[in-house]
Image 1 (cartoon, rainbow, N blue to C red):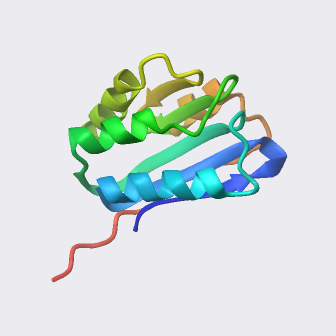
Image 2 (cartoon, rainbow, N blue to C red; image 1 turned 135 degrees about the horizontal axis):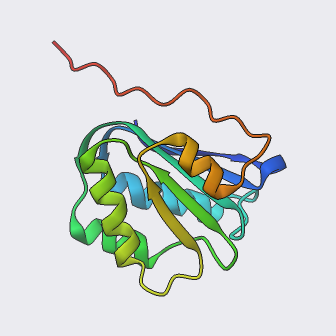
Length: 136
């Protein structure tokens, strides 16, 4: 699956899902799609669900390119839910690489913390993404 997103306009929210094997091209492609999406607004908040990641095949160059091309702007609050150590480390590295980005990003291990930080009262997180079963 890689990366996908949906826009929840009534909550001014971009809900992104990272699942299965994640690559540089997945991150760059989803960022490009958001940039051209008529419904996307750079001041929307974002929650990134990384609970379904089974493999992180993202390079430092890919994270740098994604960080440099951020589509979110001033006033945007972004939260990443990354319960695994690898996904959490990737989120923290991405946060550092963003430099003086105008949006605010935090990385959490638990959904409840992320939803509370984003102040998403009235929004219920969908069931977490599940990593696909390995092929036998």
